Length: 114
Length: 117
Image 1 (cartoon, rainbow over the protein chains, first blue to last red):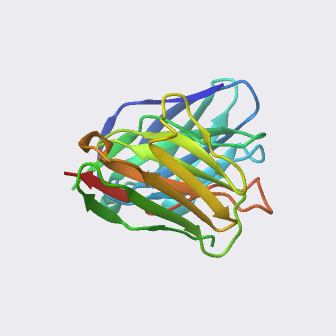
Image 2: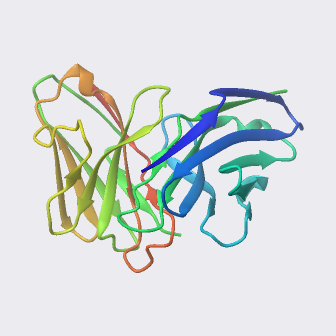
């Protein structure tokens, strides 16, 4: 069984400020972890993924995330927020075996204030 | 990059009618595709796993006679919402993973907004 908890359904930051979106996971097998971004009425775009290689993962648009096994966390960060970063962000987990369907967190809506 | 296309992007139908949503992998083959449902301001919930050449695997609580899934080829899966009702109104998203590399991420379609009136 696997699950994802995203702390904070809404996060608001000022433009240029640090973005930190929290994700904790639970998995009975070694996990694959993902962060996706969703803009209104659109599908999901992959930001980055962890697949048991480097624990610090760099993604698109300046985002990165660090896999911390001891804390069962995979928090998403970006040093400087841009207005275009305003969107819904989903953390997801899948097992590295089997059919590998994704289990999503509840999502975090990021607002960027000018 | 791998592209997954969903059609239609949005559809409005009358109660009692059926609606078919297509999910196509445009530049890769997918043995397995996944169908998700997303209610407004909520997360994605897995509905079913679509398996090419065999029956779909449905998640607990999802009516298989209501949501018919067909995976007729390695590039196409369809979801048919039968006898649609207003409570079926939702955002439906499919995803697919390339058959030749199961270690890659799943690629998502752009979603289909279904409104039943």
